[in-house]
Figure 1 (cartoon, rainbow, N blue to C red):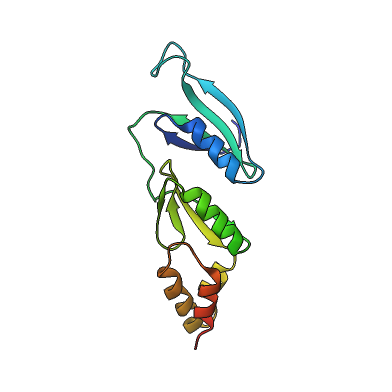
Figure 2: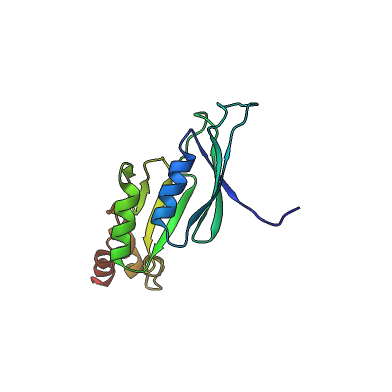
Length: 158
């Protein structure tokens, strides 16, 4: 048995488009292979069945399995961002055609949830000074896209 664990993402019909989109957004990513349904079905022969792809070196499979299942927030991808410019870029690109949510969460146009998180945020939220951590948390909870300067200012306010 292989020791590899691969996340499989269930799409209705758009696995190939999603994989291409994700690979265009996330650095060090690529589509690896596309398999197609044959005559045995259950979908029309020649249509895309699976797409193997890597995001930042991690392997995923997109499956065109039909409309029976949809993504929800129980599973999300978290993108760590070095600075506000990265937060802004990922937020803009990933939320286009999707839905912006609270506290750095969004759904992309395929319905997959993402958390766009500045690298500094966990440090501010876990500050050993409970008042500073509380102020940071309160600021974050009031936001859609995270503004790390604003969270920092709130944490530092006395």
